[in-house]
Amino acid sequence: MLHASLVLNIIVLTPLLWALSQDTSGMSEAFGPDSPARRILSAVYFAILLMSIGLLGGLVFSERDVVPHVVALLVMQVIYKVTTAVVLGVAHPVVVTNLLISAVHMTTLL
Image 1 (cartoon, rainbow, N blue to C red):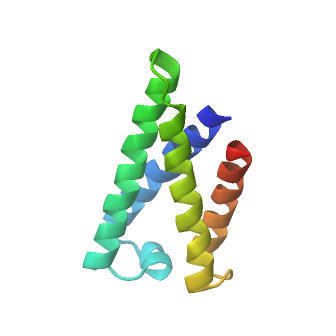
Image 2 (tube, helix red, strand yellow):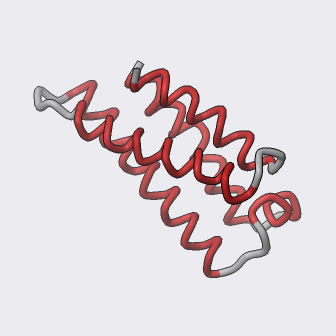
C-alpha cells in the first residue's frame, strides 16, 4: 500500500504541476491567479513529487529501510490536505481532491 500512495502522488502531481505552469483559467479558478503564493504551493507540490519518486525508488531498489520516511511524508500530506478543508470549506474543488487523496494515504497509514 505504501507503493500505491507514492504512485498516486506521482500520478496526480505530474499533470497538476504542468497545468499550474500553464496558468489556464481552470487553474486560476481553482488555485487563484498566478501569484507568489501559488508559485510557493507549486514548489511544495514539486518537493512532494520528488520525495515520492525518491522514496518509491527506495522501496523498490534499496536495502535501506525508507518506510519511516514514507510515513512522515504521508502524515504531512494528510495534515496539509485535511487542513485545506478547514480553511476553504469542503465545497472547494481542490479540497474535494485533497480529501480523496488523504483518505488513500490514511488507509495506507492504518
